[in-house]
Length: 273
Image (cartoon, rainbow, N blue to C red; front, side):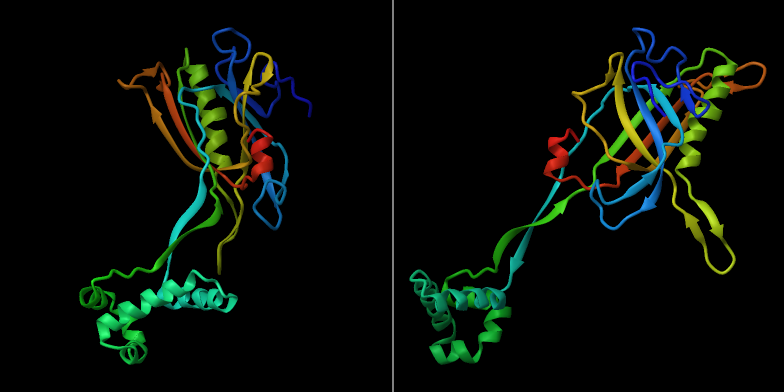
């Protein structure tokens, strides 16, 4: 299906609110949410998973506070004396001249603590686990070595708050049936078996994009396929009020939180994600 990006698409599977979204100057900027089916794949990068769709669309005004966070997993890890000793032995085998001083420092520390080299070798296991005793006896502090190791990129999170204010009961019903239902139903799985064990068909995933009157916003970050992890709906506004005669709320506030299910690498970043 070809979509005219200068305005939200017009289709039975498309919900647009407010009605002038993408058409008037006041509501020229909007977000588009499209649903997809996860078909499967091995891996977690943007090219590893295949999807079916899109199936349905929702277009809403861009709320305030749009942002994205990029996180990389760098963690501090300590390497114990035994592991450090393996590396030290490798350096000695290579003939690294700087290692001699290190070995001498270890031996001197042990000699001060235990009263001789024989004590160092005979109680080496105790030195590893009793650093406080060594420090007190020798006047030197011994520590495990520390390194920063890379554990990979993190999945991004996105959250949006929409305050939807219908002008009449008809628009309030439209918000309930076409906007709230779109997010609520597509975020939930379908149950396929339920007697001996539960088997679910995965919920739909969402593609999120930002649009203006001239098309997709090139200055905004792209977003990979996302799972809708939580949704909150508040009815009636600050002072609860409804339309007569059917008690449809005069305001519906929707908060949706997403987690990107595709990991990004440097090529994705360069492509605008």
